[in-house]
Length: 326
Ligand code: AMP
Ligand code: FES
Ligand code: ZN
Ligand code: ZN
Image: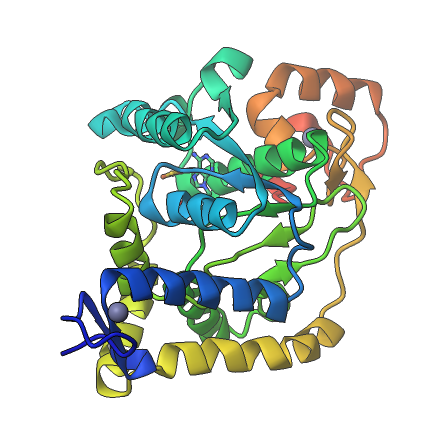
Protein backbone atom coordinates (compact mmCIF):
# COMPACT_ATOMS: atom_id res chain seq x y z
CA UNK A 1 0.00 0.00 0.00
CA UNK A 2 0.98 3.58 -0.58
CA UNK A 3 0.70 6.79 1.45
CA UNK A 4 -2.60 8.53 0.71
CA UNK A 5 -0.88 11.89 0.47
CA UNK A 6 2.52 11.43 -1.22
CA UNK A 7 2.25 7.86 -2.60
CA UNK A 8 5.49 6.79 -0.90
CA UNK A 9 5.48 3.25 0.54
CA UNK A 10 3.07 3.08 3.47
CA UNK A 11 4.43 2.89 7.02
CA UNK A 12 1.01 2.19 8.52
CA UNK A 13 -2.34 0.99 7.22
CA UNK A 14 -5.42 2.25 9.07
CA UNK A 15 -8.45 0.13 8.13
CA UNK A 16 -10.73 2.13 10.46
CA UNK A 17 -9.98 5.23 8.38
CA UNK A 18 -9.69 3.24 5.15
CA UNK A 19 -6.27 4.73 4.48
CA UNK A 20 -2.48 4.36 4.78
CA UNK A 21 0.38 6.79 5.42
CA UNK A 22 4.15 7.24 5.20
CA UNK A 23 5.83 8.21 8.51
CA UNK A 24 5.67 11.97 7.92
CA UNK A 25 2.05 12.05 6.81
CA UNK A 26 1.04 9.66 9.57
CA UNK A 27 2.56 12.03 12.13
CA UNK A 28 0.56 14.93 10.66
CA UNK A 29 -2.61 12.83 10.53
CA UNK A 30 -2.25 11.65 14.14
CA UNK A 31 -1.65 15.15 15.53
CA UNK A 32 -4.59 16.50 13.54
CA UNK A 33 -6.86 13.77 14.86
CA UNK A 34 -5.98 14.47 18.50
CA UNK A 35 -6.32 18.20 17.90
CA UNK A 36 -9.82 17.55 16.54
CA UNK A 37 -10.74 15.51 19.61
CA UNK A 38 -9.53 18.33 21.88
CA UNK A 39 -11.62 20.87 19.94
CA UNK A 40 -14.66 18.64 19.56
CA UNK A 41 -14.97 18.07 23.30
CA UNK A 42 -13.68 21.56 24.24
CA UNK A 43 -10.93 20.10 26.38
CA UNK A 44 -8.36 22.90 26.36
CA UNK A 45 -7.91 26.50 25.21
CA UNK A 46 -4.75 27.13 23.12
CA UNK A 47 -1.48 26.98 25.09
CA UNK A 48 -3.15 25.88 28.35
CA UNK A 49 -1.22 24.38 31.27
CA UNK A 50 -2.00 20.67 31.57
CA UNK A 51 -1.07 18.17 34.26
CA UNK A 52 -0.37 14.86 32.53
CA UNK A 53 -0.48 11.71 34.67
CA UNK A 54 2.39 9.54 33.45
CA UNK A 55 2.40 5.82 34.23
CA UNK A 56 5.44 4.96 32.11
CA UNK A 57 3.21 3.11 29.63
CA UNK A 58 3.13 4.19 25.97
CA UNK A 59 -0.37 5.72 26.15
CA UNK A 60 0.37 8.36 28.76
CA UNK A 61 3.82 9.15 27.28
CA UNK A 62 2.24 9.63 23.85
CA UNK A 63 -0.46 11.84 25.44
CA UNK A 64 2.25 14.08 26.92
CA UNK A 65 4.25 14.27 23.68
CA UNK A 66 1.22 15.06 21.52
CA UNK A 67 0.07 17.81 23.90
CA UNK A 68 3.57 19.28 23.87
CA UNK A 69 3.73 19.18 20.05
CA UNK A 70 0.31 20.86 19.91
CA UNK A 71 1.68 23.77 21.96
CA UNK A 72 0.30 23.06 25.44
CA UNK A 73 2.35 23.46 28.63
CA UNK A 74 2.80 19.92 29.88
CA UNK A 75 3.53 19.19 33.55
CA UNK A 76 4.28 15.52 34.21
CA UNK A 77 3.19 13.70 37.34
CA UNK A 78 4.21 10.17 38.34
CA UNK A 79 3.04 8.17 41.37
CA UNK A 80 5.59 5.69 42.66
CA UNK A 81 3.31 2.99 44.06
CA UNK A 82 6.21 0.97 45.48
CA UNK A 83 5.30 -2.22 43.59
CA UNK A 84 8.46 -4.29 43.81
CA UNK A 85 7.27 -7.39 41.96
CA UNK A 86 8.58 -7.43 38.36
CA UNK A 87 10.54 -4.31 39.37
CA UNK A 88 7.33 -2.63 38.21
CA UNK A 89 7.39 0.75 39.97
CA UNK A 90 11.15 1.32 39.64
CA UNK A 91 11.11 0.46 35.92
CA UNK A 92 8.05 2.67 35.33
CA UNK A 93 9.73 5.53 37.15
CA UNK A 94 12.87 5.20 35.01
CA UNK A 95 10.79 5.24 31.81
CA UNK A 96 8.98 8.42 32.93
CA UNK A 97 12.18 10.14 34.08
CA UNK A 98 14.01 9.36 30.85
CA UNK A 99 11.08 10.57 28.75
CA UNK A 100 10.65 13.85 30.65
CA UNK A 101 14.34 14.61 30.61
CA UNK A 102 14.55 13.90 26.85
CA UNK A 103 11.50 16.05 26.14
CA UNK A 104 12.51 18.71 28.64
CA UNK A 105 9.26 18.47 30.59
CA UNK A 106 8.85 19.29 34.29
CA UNK A 107 8.12 16.18 36.34
CA UNK A 108 6.88 15.69 39.90
CA UNK A 109 7.21 12.27 41.50
CA UNK A 110 5.03 11.30 44.44
CA UNK A 111 6.31 8.29 46.36
CA UNK A 112 3.81 6.48 48.59
CA UNK A 113 6.68 5.01 50.59
CA UNK A 114 8.21 8.42 51.29
CA UNK A 115 4.91 10.04 52.26
CA UNK A 116 3.08 7.26 54.06
CA UNK A 117 5.81 4.66 54.81
CA UNK A 118 3.65 2.09 53.04
CA UNK A 119 3.36 0.76 49.51
CA UNK A 120 0.76 -0.93 47.30
CA UNK A 121 2.69 -4.20 47.69
CA UNK A 122 2.30 -3.99 51.48
CA UNK A 123 -1.36 -3.10 51.10
CA UNK A 124 -1.84 -6.11 48.82
CA UNK A 125 -0.81 -8.44 51.63
CA UNK A 126 -3.95 -7.63 53.58
CA UNK A 127 -6.37 -6.20 50.99
CA UNK A 128 -8.13 -8.25 48.37
CA UNK A 129 -9.18 -5.23 46.34
CA UNK A 130 -5.65 -4.04 45.57
CA UNK A 131 -6.50 -2.75 42.12
CA UNK A 132 -9.55 -0.81 43.31
CA UNK A 133 -7.64 0.80 46.17
CA UNK A 134 -4.76 1.58 43.84
CA UNK A 135 -7.26 3.28 41.52
CA UNK A 136 -8.68 5.37 44.39
CA UNK A 137 -5.12 6.29 45.41
CA UNK A 138 -4.08 7.37 41.92
CA UNK A 139 -7.25 9.37 41.31
CA UNK A 140 -6.88 11.21 44.61
CA UNK A 141 -3.20 12.10 44.09
CA UNK A 142 -3.61 13.09 40.43
CA UNK A 143 -6.52 15.38 41.32
CA UNK A 144 -4.61 16.94 44.20
CA UNK A 145 -1.59 17.58 41.96
CA UNK A 146 -3.59 19.19 39.16
CA UNK A 147 -5.34 21.51 41.63
CA UNK A 148 -2.05 22.30 43.40
CA UNK A 149 -0.25 23.48 40.26
CA UNK A 150 -3.33 25.35 39.01
CA UNK A 151 -3.52 23.32 35.80
CA UNK A 152 -6.43 23.98 33.46
CA UNK A 153 -7.00 20.21 33.27
CA UNK A 154 -5.68 16.82 34.28
CA UNK A 155 -4.96 14.57 31.29
CA UNK A 156 -4.68 10.78 31.42
CA UNK A 157 -3.61 8.36 28.70
CA UNK A 158 -6.90 6.48 28.29
CA UNK A 159 -7.37 5.34 24.69
CA UNK A 160 -10.31 4.47 22.45
CA UNK A 161 -9.77 0.81 23.37
CA UNK A 162 -10.01 1.66 27.10
CA UNK A 163 -13.04 3.92 26.70
CA UNK A 164 -14.96 1.51 24.48
CA UNK A 165 -14.19 -1.49 26.72
CA UNK A 166 -15.33 0.27 29.89
CA UNK A 167 -18.43 1.53 28.10
CA UNK A 168 -19.27 -2.03 27.08
CA UNK A 169 -18.62 -3.32 30.62
CA UNK A 170 -20.80 -0.58 32.14
CA UNK A 171 -23.57 -1.29 29.65
CA UNK A 172 -23.53 -4.98 30.51
CA UNK A 173 -23.91 -4.06 34.17
CA UNK A 174 -26.27 -1.16 33.41
CA UNK A 175 -24.21 0.88 35.79
CA UNK A 176 -25.92 4.24 35.22
CA UNK A 177 -23.55 6.19 37.44
CA UNK A 178 -20.45 5.10 35.52
CA UNK A 179 -22.37 5.42 32.26
CA UNK A 180 -22.79 9.10 33.07
CA UNK A 181 -19.05 9.51 33.69
CA UNK A 182 -17.48 7.84 30.66
CA UNK A 183 -16.98 11.07 28.71
CA UNK A 184 -13.56 12.18 27.45
CA UNK A 185 -14.03 15.57 29.14
CA UNK A 186 -15.41 15.97 32.66
CA UNK A 187 -15.70 19.65 33.63
CA UNK A 188 -14.34 20.79 37.00
CA UNK A 189 -16.47 20.63 40.14
CA UNK A 190 -15.71 21.92 43.63
CA UNK A 191 -12.71 19.90 44.83
CA UNK A 192 -12.29 18.17 41.47
CA UNK A 193 -10.02 19.22 38.62
CA UNK A 194 -11.21 19.13 35.02
CA UNK A 195 -10.40 15.70 33.58
CA UNK A 196 -9.56 15.06 29.95
CA UNK A 197 -8.59 12.07 27.82
CA UNK A 198 -7.04 13.43 24.62
CA UNK A 199 -6.49 9.94 23.10
CA UNK A 200 -10.11 8.88 23.67
CA UNK A 201 -10.72 8.50 19.91
CA UNK A 202 -7.30 7.03 19.02
CA UNK A 203 -6.83 3.27 18.59
CA UNK A 204 -4.09 1.06 19.95
CA UNK A 205 -2.26 0.53 16.64
CA UNK A 206 -2.02 4.23 15.84
CA UNK A 207 -0.74 5.03 19.31
CA UNK A 208 1.86 2.29 19.12
CA UNK A 209 3.00 3.52 15.69
CA UNK A 210 3.29 7.10 16.96
CA UNK A 211 5.32 5.87 19.96
CA UNK A 212 7.67 3.96 17.64
CA UNK A 213 8.02 6.90 15.31
CA UNK A 214 9.19 9.04 18.23
CA UNK A 215 11.32 6.32 19.77
CA UNK A 216 9.35 6.44 22.99
CA UNK A 217 10.56 3.72 25.34
CA UNK A 218 7.70 2.70 27.62
CA UNK A 219 8.05 0.41 30.60
CA UNK A 220 7.88 -3.24 29.61
CA UNK A 221 7.07 -4.78 33.00
CA UNK A 222 3.41 -5.37 33.78
CA UNK A 223 1.68 -4.72 37.09
CA UNK A 224 1.48 -8.00 39.01
CA UNK A 225 -1.99 -7.10 40.25
CA UNK A 226 -3.13 -6.54 36.66
CA UNK A 227 -6.74 -5.56 36.03
CA UNK A 228 -9.31 -8.29 36.04
CA UNK A 229 -9.38 -10.68 33.13
CA UNK A 230 -12.98 -9.51 32.58
CA UNK A 231 -11.86 -6.12 31.26
CA UNK A 232 -9.49 -7.86 28.85
CA UNK A 233 -12.36 -10.01 27.61
CA UNK A 234 -14.38 -6.91 26.70
CA UNK A 235 -11.34 -5.58 24.84
CA UNK A 236 -10.93 -8.87 22.99
CA UNK A 237 -14.63 -8.90 22.03
CA UNK A 238 -14.34 -5.38 20.62
CA UNK A 239 -11.14 -6.29 18.75
CA UNK A 240 -12.98 -9.16 17.13
CA UNK A 241 -15.82 -6.85 16.03
CA UNK A 242 -13.34 -4.23 14.81
CA UNK A 243 -11.61 -6.77 12.61
CA UNK A 244 -14.87 -7.58 10.87
CA UNK A 245 -16.14 -3.99 10.77
CA UNK A 246 -13.25 -1.50 10.84
CA UNK A 247 -14.24 1.70 12.66
CA UNK A 248 -16.95 0.11 14.80
CA UNK A 249 -15.17 0.85 18.11
CA UNK A 250 -14.99 4.51 17.32
CA UNK A 251 -18.58 4.57 16.10
CA UNK A 252 -19.69 2.88 19.34
CA UNK A 253 -17.81 5.23 21.66
CA UNK A 254 -18.36 8.47 19.72
CA UNK A 255 -22.08 7.65 19.59
CA UNK A 256 -22.10 7.22 23.35
CA UNK A 257 -20.56 10.68 23.85
CA UNK A 258 -23.61 12.15 22.10
CA UNK A 259 -26.03 10.30 24.39
CA UNK A 260 -24.16 10.31 27.72
CA UNK A 261 -26.24 13.25 29.05
CA UNK A 262 -29.26 10.94 29.17
CA UNK A 263 -27.53 8.82 31.83
CA UNK A 264 -26.52 11.89 33.77
CA UNK A 265 -30.12 12.94 34.22
CA UNK A 266 -30.92 9.49 35.58
CA UNK A 267 -28.24 9.28 38.24
CA UNK A 268 -28.40 11.22 41.45
CA UNK A 269 -24.99 11.64 43.08
CA UNK A 270 -24.58 10.49 46.67
CA UNK A 271 -24.46 13.51 49.02
CA UNK A 272 -20.93 14.90 49.28
CA UNK A 273 -19.18 16.03 52.45
CA UNK A 274 -15.61 17.08 53.15
CA UNK A 275 -13.22 14.42 54.39
CA UNK A 276 -12.33 15.17 58.02
CA UNK A 277 -8.66 14.50 57.30
CA UNK A 278 -7.83 15.88 53.84
CA UNK A 279 -10.83 18.15 53.23
CA UNK A 280 -11.49 16.78 49.74
CA UNK A 281 -15.06 15.79 48.75
CA UNK A 282 -16.06 12.40 50.12
CA UNK A 283 -19.23 10.34 50.49
CA UNK A 284 -18.24 9.28 54.02
CA UNK A 285 -16.76 11.32 56.91
CA UNK A 286 -13.28 10.06 56.04
CA UNK A 287 -12.45 9.36 52.42
CA UNK A 288 -11.15 5.98 51.27
CA UNK A 289 -7.76 7.51 50.47
CA UNK A 290 -7.25 8.75 54.04
CA UNK A 291 -8.65 5.55 55.55
CA UNK A 292 -6.11 3.63 53.49
CA UNK A 293 -2.98 5.78 53.76
CA UNK A 294 -3.49 7.96 56.84
CA UNK A 295 -4.96 5.33 59.14
CA UNK A 296 -3.70 6.79 62.41
CA UNK A 297 -4.85 10.33 61.61
CA UNK A 298 -8.19 8.95 60.42
CA UNK A 299 -8.62 7.02 63.66
CA UNK A 300 -7.92 10.12 65.74
CA UNK A 301 -10.29 12.30 63.74
CA UNK A 302 -13.06 9.73 64.01
CA UNK A 303 -12.51 9.39 67.78
CA UNK A 304 -13.07 13.16 68.13
CA UNK A 305 -16.11 13.08 65.90
CA UNK A 306 -18.27 10.92 68.19
CA UNK A 307 -20.99 10.12 68.77
CA UNK A 308 -22.99 9.84 65.56
CA UNK A 309 -21.89 8.45 62.23
CA UNK A 310 -24.12 9.39 59.33
CA UNK A 311 -24.44 5.76 58.28
CA UNK A 312 -25.16 4.46 61.75
CA UNK A 313 -21.78 2.69 61.93
CA UNK A 314 -20.50 2.55 65.47
CA UNK A 315 -16.71 2.60 65.33
CA UNK A 316 -13.85 3.52 63.04
CA UNK A 317 -13.33 -0.17 62.29
CA UNK A 318 -16.96 -0.31 61.16
CA UNK A 319 -16.29 2.70 58.96
CA UNK A 320 -13.32 1.01 57.34
CA UNK A 321 -15.30 -2.13 56.68
CA UNK A 322 -18.63 -0.70 55.64
CA UNK A 323 -18.25 2.86 54.39
CA UNK A 324 -16.51 1.98 51.11
CA UNK A 325 -17.00 5.00 48.93
CA UNK A 326 -15.08 3.49 45.98
P1 AMP B 1 -4.53 2.52 34.11
O1 AMP B 1 -5.63 2.72 35.06
O2 AMP B 1 -3.31 1.85 34.70
O3 AMP B 1 -4.94 1.97 32.79
O4 AMP B 1 -4.00 4.00 33.79
C1 AMP B 1 -4.80 4.97 33.20
C2 AMP B 1 -4.07 6.30 33.19
O5 AMP B 1 -3.81 6.71 34.54
C3 AMP B 1 -2.70 6.25 32.52
O6 AMP B 1 -2.81 6.44 31.14
C4 AMP B 1 -2.01 7.41 33.19
O7 AMP B 1 -2.40 8.64 32.61
C5 AMP B 1 -2.55 7.36 34.61
N1 AMP B 1 -1.66 6.59 35.51
C6 AMP B 1 -1.67 5.25 35.73
N2 AMP B 1 -0.72 4.91 36.62
C7 AMP B 1 -0.08 6.05 36.99
C8 AMP B 1 1.01 6.35 37.87
N3 AMP B 1 1.63 5.41 38.58
N4 AMP B 1 1.39 7.66 38.00
C9 AMP B 1 0.75 8.63 37.30
N5 AMP B 1 -0.27 8.38 36.45
C10 AMP B 1 -0.68 7.12 36.29
FE1 FES C 1 -2.32 -0.30 40.65
FE2 FES C 1 -1.64 -2.42 39.30
S1 FES C 1 -1.07 -0.38 38.93
S2 FES C 1 -2.79 -2.34 41.12
ZN1 ZN D 1 3.28 10.47 2.66
ZN1 ZN E 1 -9.39 12.29 52.90
